[in-house]
Image 1 (tube, rainbow, N blue to C red):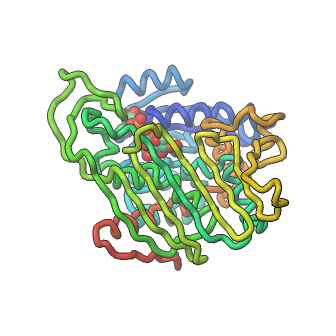
Image 2 (image 1 turned 120 degrees about the vertical axis):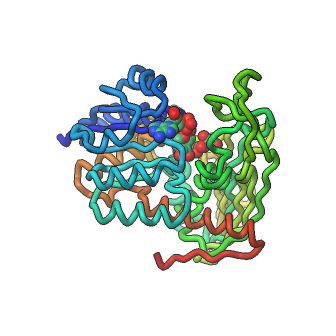
Image 3 (image 1 turned 90 degrees about the horizontal axis):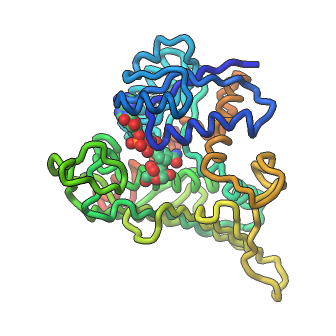
Length: 390
Ligand code: NAI
Ligand code: SOE
């Protein structure tokens, strides 16, 4: 069996999810194709590095990610840091011959993402990007229905990823509000997930036009700030300008001619983490909400008049990822979708076939290209075309 020594950079929110998914791989996919050992967890914060080693069960910890590059026991690297660090870490890891699994958005812009993709391809390492929502059973079933023509000719798609955590003006500054660390705001943060699903279902985007808004223009700086947690007064050390979008609405057109709407926001009261995708065609419709991750709603124009309506399909053994559980309703959730990605990643390494990864740096690059185009359109007010010759 292939041995893979995995090391992870970033012991925050995503560090936890990646660890749970890595550990679950041999449990869900038995017998596993690879024997995965958790080597080193790196976090710039020494306390997070120390507790992550204990909590996540890595063999050792460090505070400088560069140490990993000369570590022979590390054959694959997970990049779960803020976005501005993705490119420097990934490029060094590729140079050192490591396989790389990088969180989304792949890079701060399309050009950087393209360079990362090219470097990984040329080095022959396995490369994956964390657009995990397209691994959900219901999203995969939606694609199967579209591909086999059950929805007929596709007319429209609606992609919505809305949250509320940004709304409190007292919620402190953190890297997600800072363009130098995040690239864009909600557009790259959650819009990237929705854009990836749109492309997975319907192919490349052709052009976009958009409007973005920043509702809270300045925030408190507070040490250790995380998402919406309001800091104590004695933690506040100053104020910083917010230079990213809080809300973005875009009209999109695909190369196929289908048109659609993207809405991504961190200012939607009542929506903690809502990802909704709806597709409408000449023969039927399909809709998915991650508020009910194990259901797909499907309307068939072929149904008899008396029973026409959206039917609720429960994801089970007969559906994509059906091998995970023996019955419907047991749930393919957050950990499982990441584990589905890891199965691809580990098996691509074991089989020495980088192409086996369902969501590669190329997919990450194509999303970054569209993010750039949407951000540009918000500035110019013009439609912006996407270059699909690359
Ligand atoms: P976080 O802020 O919770 O954690 C980031 C960690 O990186 C922190 O512990 C921080 O100390 C550490 N860090 C910062 N600079 C570092 C450096 N130079 N070296 C080593 N460690 C460093 O952020 P979170 O939510 O874990 O996000 C990380 C990445 O994952 C982002 O790119 C984000 O977009 C992505 N993400 C993806 C999700 C998904 O569903 N696929 C969900 C949440 C985040
Ligand atoms: C914050 O908006 C966040 O953690 C994003 O960074 C993730 O990508 C999203 O899936 C959940 O929310």
